[in-house]
Length: 305
Image 1 (cartoon, rainbow, N blue to C red):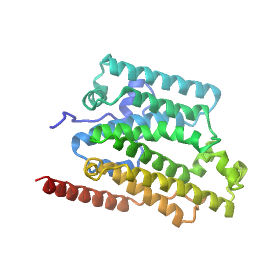
Image 2: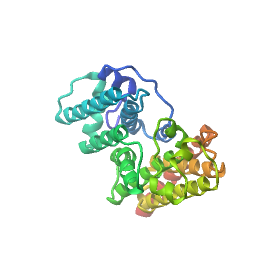
Image 3: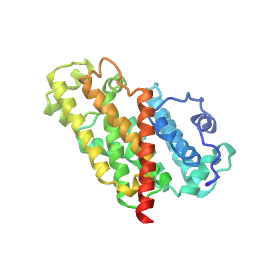
């Protein structure tokens, strides 16, 4: 047992600790990536994912009155205080031990978790974005920072790998935004920047009314091109000999890039259905990248011999 991780924390554990309703565990694209990790890394990254997902669930709870939003902000502030206590060594709860081990063993900076909570908190304070720069700040807080946490677990040798993690986070979040235009507008969120809507003469009312026309297609092609740019930026930041370490992140890259392709191939019919990558295809991509990582490790060992 390399690192002493024999279990991971779940959203159920976090809900019980907060004395809130136990939440259902949802399926995610991340599961296919985690499956190929060693047991210790898998437990650590599952603890991180559970925490991220749990914080996100607080924000996304359907109640949206002023009092409900106030309560959500209070809960997020409570979790910020809990993070402070974790790093001060003031948490003594057996159910939270896996999270305590995670922080202690991998030396994850406290600010990463605080930034994550702040990023999710933004959804309670803002539901429209004027510019892409503004949206990018949001993407950093809810996705780029998760990438930075993840590479602390995977391990890395080069500072440039941090830029890989951040840019991949941008790419994944932008892909989510494209896929979820309908689901988000039903919650009264429009993440597509106002400057982009104006550029392509497609209004918020058009999104709300699910207008599918050439303006919409041009807008979506532009969003897709931007997401693809961030996939490319991420890949160019990754040293070849680092790929064997972060191959789980590369699996996420492959799954979400395929999702982006499917959205494009479906001619952006995102108002009609939620476009997904099939489970068999996710498994195929995970297996493919694991094999490639193993071959890369062998090649590096031979070159260094």
